[in-house]
Image (cartoon, rainbow, N blue to C red; front, side, top):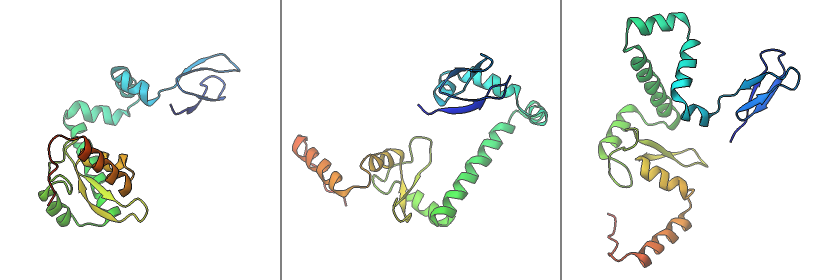
Length: 167
């Protein structure tokens, strides 16, 4: 669990903790929001966040219920464009690769409905688009070919069905 630093609202002393912390100077209890807390208490965190949203944003949400959906779509688009810039395929190349499916299993993106940009972690070179399952599997093997070979041998020994060759 990661630690989060914040300051006491009474005496401005720096607090570092994982969830609750009592200030050593003034004994005020401070709530520290961690990722686990946010996941388990979505409604409380959402209410807390709404209370601190800027007034113009609250008015915009009240006027247009789809405002947040458009903002989220813009954010996803910006992340996508940043990935294209980082790994250097053009949007046309991405669309061509995406139309073929996952580079390993040829399947749909799965998960959040998007492909992962697979890249060599040492050189940063773009290798292809992977679905969530294949990307996770490669990540678990740390791009280690020896481990992948040993995993394949394990499956060959322990599988009742013959393993078909991948074309």
